[in-house]
Length: 241
Ligand SMILES: Nc1ncnc2c1ncn2[C@@H]1O[C@H](COP(=O)(O)OP(=O)(O)OP(=O)(O)O)[C@@H](O)[C@H]1O
Image (tube, rainbow, N blue to C red):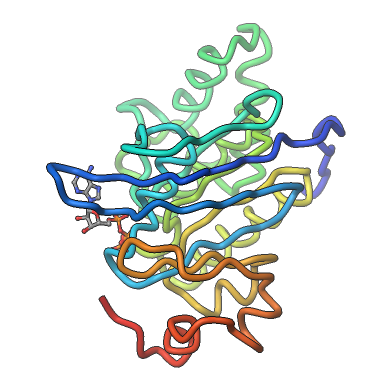
């Protein structure tokens, strides 16, 4: 299913993180950072284990309150969705997970099954609509989470290591979905450890190391002329926590 009806063309609000930091029990986990995301970019957040990537995503999406600084959307908050490494699914069928999400967002009952089935079809899950979501394979669960996000028509989609537990075919399916979201008009903010994946998907790269933002550059610059020693080491596979 390749019909990509674009989302209504309204400017996606810019996201500004100003002096945003996060501490827990007196320990600084994310040092104050500034980051501004505009337009319909695909931003890939990279860094070794424990660098603070998930923290940054949760702060940006509003799941965590910063200990200092401010997260703000210019004008209005956009429609947002988040996809996690391990999908959070209800103990119901694949179809019911989607119809439930549609009910929550106010879709009239008579349209829910039709829309949910279209989304299952798009993500290659039509044959599994009756199967309990929690017995689906990891790759299938991730596609179901993406289908649910698709139905939310997000202007901004956060994905936190959505492919780290998946095999190559499932990774490809997630990457194709990310590109479809983007072509439909969604801004992407995604974390990954995978340099090749970042090369395939990114317009710009944010590199975190040890709870610090060390670089935010266009992907072409990051991979060819990285500005920081950390980025050079990361690209060589030498940056570890
Ligand atoms: N809610 C929290 N309370 C306390 N510590 C936390 C919390 N969330 C994250 N941390 C700690 O903050 C640091 C950064 O965690 P984060 O999950 O952001 O790293 P990451 O870059 O996503 O790593 P990985 O690639 O391993 O997933 C880690 O040391 C983690 O243990």
